[in-house]
Every structure is written in C-alpha cells, then in structure tokens.
Amino acid sequence: MSSPRFAGAYHQAANWLYQLAQSHNGSNLWVDINDAPVLLIQRLAEADHVLRLNAANYRKNMHWFRHMLGPSRFSEDGPAWDIRRDLTQHYLAKFDRERTFNLACAQAANTVRELAGHSADGADHLSELCLRRLAMSVLVENFFDVPLNDTGVDLEHLASLMEFGSEYAFTPSVGKDILQHQRLHLLPALRRQIFNDFRLFRSNSLPPSPLLKGLLAADHDPSNNIQLEHELLTFFSAGADTTAAAVGWGCYLLALYPELQQQLREAVLPFWTSGDLSWKRLSQIELLEAFVSETLRLFPPTPIVTRLANSEDEIDGHHIGPDCNVSVSIIGIQHDALRHPDPWRPHLERYRNNACAGANVGFIFGPRVCGGKKFALIELATFMAVFLRDAELTLLSTDQPRFYWKSLMLREGGQPVHISLRH
Ligand code: HEM
Image (cartoon, rainbow, N blue to C red; front, top):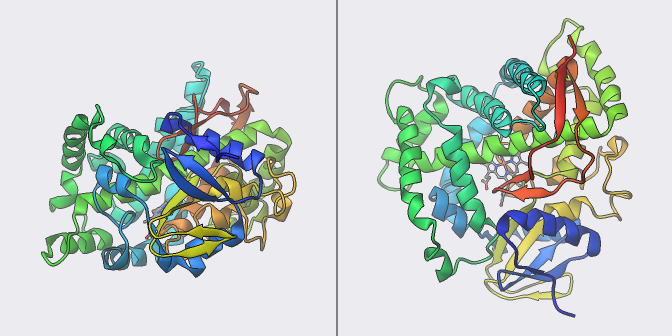
C-alpha cells in the first residue's frame, strides 16, 4: 500500500494531519511530504523517544525558519543553541508571575471590549489582529518593560513574514525549487522593514530590561553569530502568535459548548469577587487549568514538529537512516483514542497527571521544550478568566472548522464567535 501523500498547498497541512489522526489513529506511519519520505509519529511513546530519550540523535529541521527569520534559538542545534538558550531561558523561566497576571488582566479586559464592539458592528468572526495584539502586548511589556505601542513593532509586518514562512514550514528538506520561488524576491525588503521596525531595541531609548541587555551584549560579541533582530523576531513570532491562536480556539470551544462556558464562568466568578486577585489564587482553579489544557489538546497551535536523524535508529519497527525525516504530529498524539477515548471532544475531568494532556504535549517535552511554556499557561488562564467574567460568547456558524496553517494553526476564515459584554 502506498504511503499517504501530502501534495496540497502548505496552508492546508493541518487539515491533512487531522485526517491522518482519524484514518490512522494511534499509529506511526510513513508519509510522503513534498516527495520526501517522513516517519510521522502519532504515538506518545515514540514521541518520547525522539523528543526526549534519544533527543541527541534528532536535530531540528528548520531550514525554512532559518531562511525566513535568520538563525536563532528556535532554529539552531548544538553549541549555537546552547549559547542562545542560556542567554534567554533564565528570563523566560524566572519572571514575576503576579506582574504577568496583572498585565494579562488589563490587556484582556481591553480586548474583550474591542471584540464586543466588532461583534456589535456585525463582525462574523473574531479579529485575529486583536488577539495577536493582546498576546504581543503582554509579552513585550512583561519582558522588555515597555508598552507595545511605544516600540515600533508592526504586527502586520510580522504576520506577513510568518505567512511567507508557512509556505516552506512543512517542507521536510529544502530543495533548489525554493530558491526559485517566485515570491522569494520580496523577502529581503520585508526583512529590512521588520529590522527597521525593531530599531528602538538597538537604541538607548528603551528601558534597559535584563533580557535586552543580555541580547545586546551577545550581539556585540564578535565571537558568536548572534544578531539581536533574529532573536527578537523568533521570540515575538514564537511567543505571541501561538498564544493568540490558542485564545481564538479557546473562545471557539466556549461558544461551541455553552454549558461548559457556564460551568467555567461559575468556577471563575467567585475568584473575581474574592478580594484576592492574584495568580496564586487563580492558578488554583482546576477547571480553568483543565480547560486551557483541553484547548491545547484539541487545537494545538503548533500542530507538528519536524526533526532529522543524525544516525541510524529504529522506531516502532521502522528503520531510520541518517538524515531521515521524522516528524511528530502533536495533533496525532493528542487524539490517540487509546489514551483519549472520545478524542474529538473536550474532557476536562481527565487532564491531570496525564502525560498526554494538551498542557504537557502541546509545548512538547525534552530538551527542546517550549521556552515560554510557563508564561503561556499563565497568560492563557488569565485571558480566559477575563473573557468568562466580561463576555458571553456565542457561536455564529456550526460548520466544522477547516484549519489554516500559517506557521501556527489558525481557523480558516477566523473563529465564528460573537462577543457581547455581560455588564
Ligand atoms: C500556546 C502558546 C505556545 C505554544 C503552543 C508553543 C509551542 C511550542 C513548541 C511546540 C515548541 C517546540 C518547537 C520545536 O522544537 O520544533 C516551542 C518552542 C519554543 N517556544 Fe513556544 N509555544 C507557545 C508560546 C510561547 C511563548 C509565550 C514563548 C515566549 C515567551 C515561547 C517561546 C519558545 C521558545 C524560545 C522556543 C524554542 C525552545 C528551544 O528550542 O530552545 N513559546 N514552542
């Protein structure tokens, strides 16, 4: 039997991954992507082998990302990755949770009002730009101590670059054809524009946040190949659009399951009137944590991670040769019916201590675990708690979602959700 083949436009890739999660549920299988054979992992045990236990044998396959965004912590391996990780991870892990919570509360309240205004004006889907601005505002102010509006960062320029990148994101190996791609000549100008948007980060006019100081020092050090703009670009695109996509999917789930929305609202409203508005207290609402986890399980913003084998290996009886493509379908793992009976619906009751839960797999695991996992989980729980407090979310279309890959997984046409203010 021939291997399932992906030959469509790249932005359709997540639709194909969902189909495979249904047709080959819980199986690892050879697939053909762009004429290259790829072992697609859809089971947790083998994902654990590739991403954690034998991670040293599987380097990242991110030519496309390096090509679009420049070498950065996201794309590099070995010593080039070690140095970048050491440069940023301390700040990504050791931030002030309460401050993040307060920033997320304030920004989410503004976003709900803005989205409700759009709905009142007849919008038939949530504005992706609004959600991206929400996530980016909190990220920038949290780590660089400056409001997004004062930085010159242009979200539309960043989105164009990500869209550009998505055309190559699913390519298992970069061939000559990419270099002949007709739109490629537009890339240098776009990158120049974005670097120009970032110029304040190089000037002395921004407050000297410890993260920025560290990045600038590394940029000035001739002994390495670190460029401030590359790291910023990666940080902003890895850290804001993913979270924004997850908020969109969370809103969709609330609108799709009104009883769940009501149950969650009843769980969070006592918090808002308690007089103790802190992350410490919000983080204790298990139902909210479970909802965030199930949102990430059902609709992982990063639906696949791609790797290349360094040397021979065997996975689930499949021989892996050097330079073999191995990809982990996060969608496949998170919909494995053996671990998740009735995998296509939210099940908030079974997220705890489940290695396969969205909050555990959606950010992957092992040495290349998402650097911003803790930060993203705080943001997401806080955003959803504010949305539940301030808004009613209603579904505008019962159509099954079609997925749109844009270096992260969005819904084609946007999330069909109406937002009305509760007071
Ligand atoms: C819901 C939101 C998010 C999701 C689902 C997500 C998911 C992921 C995934 C799956 C990876 C691994 C990619 C791979 O190895 O191929 C990753 C890496 C990364 N993420 Fe996230 N992410 C999210 C939010 C964030 C945020 C908010 C930040 C920054 C504050 C961030 C920073 C990073 C970094 C720096 C890496 C590279 C880690 C490394 O290889 O050293 N992410 N993310």
